[in-house]
Length: 279
Image 1 (cartoon, rainbow, N blue to C red):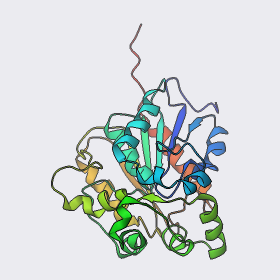
Image 2: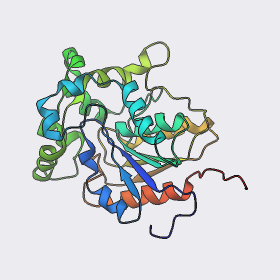
Image 3: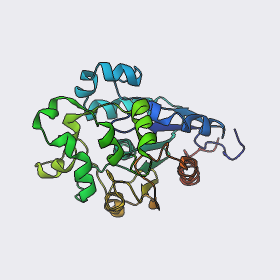
């Protein structure tokens, strides 16, 4: 350890990836956090045990996935630890982080460029344009939906050169479950009753930080600000921070270290530690 962790403080960071990605998207963050003395876990979604190339070859693994089984799987990873970890999620991983914290899991959470749970109704034009390739054909609800390199450049990596964006697409990008894009996005707010990404925004939970990128097209700052504001009825700590000039690919775009350090330092400083009863 680096000497900054007190007795009972979290010693593990759980990194939760988003859609169109796999645990490989955290490959820079893992050694960065390990060098600070943390154990780092990067659980994939159920069925994502193979590498990026394997998922591209078997897209039905992606298409068949459901949110409940994914949350249950990630909850099992967290519950198996000997003390509550810090949970950091990116994009839809931010939604999953909120769902995990709402279950009472984790010592603190950070949602980076988070996709919103049900009830957040802000839908900026850039988000509509980013998601249009996935939603223009209703048949995609049963498929794994991929971004072309051009679409990826607009949605994820709009601050990078096209050359650098294409390299990121080639190394990291997979399809996303079409069913999730149709059911758990804006359309979730149009259905009666609670959907599978609903959370009780008034519930107590571990502290949560939202980090947004000022140039993010697919999950713009207005979406993250609205998401954070929905938690105002909760007694738990909720904070929001915005990085100007950063896009959705903030986990690997130049300057990712500042985002990683901010997320970790905030989570460690605000973490709830288990109460130790006197002997």
